[in-house]
Image (cartoon, rainbow, N blue to C red; front, side, top):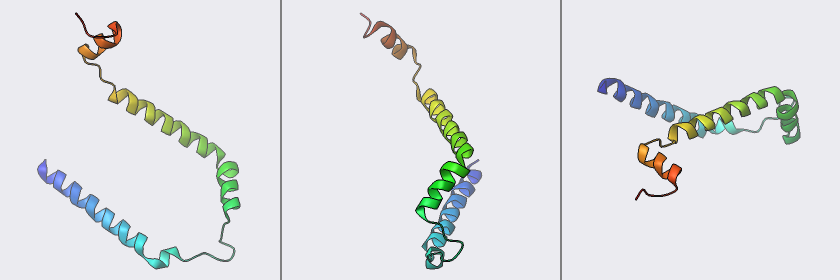
Length: 91
């Protein structure tokens, strides 16, 4: 089990190293000119008009993820539940 954990950590570090190398390459950040270029207004139109359904689905998935995270974080120990029910410490 420790071997799998070590390989997973090394894989994550390697992946982050590759990602960092790609992101730092200046050739990837040259401005695009010509017919492939997109202005900010065209990008906003594409996201809100052409990809509207995808944006709604993504919002629903993120909402479900936040609700699930809130449920998992909730502390349901008996002492905390009694605190909530009675409004304070028991006498």
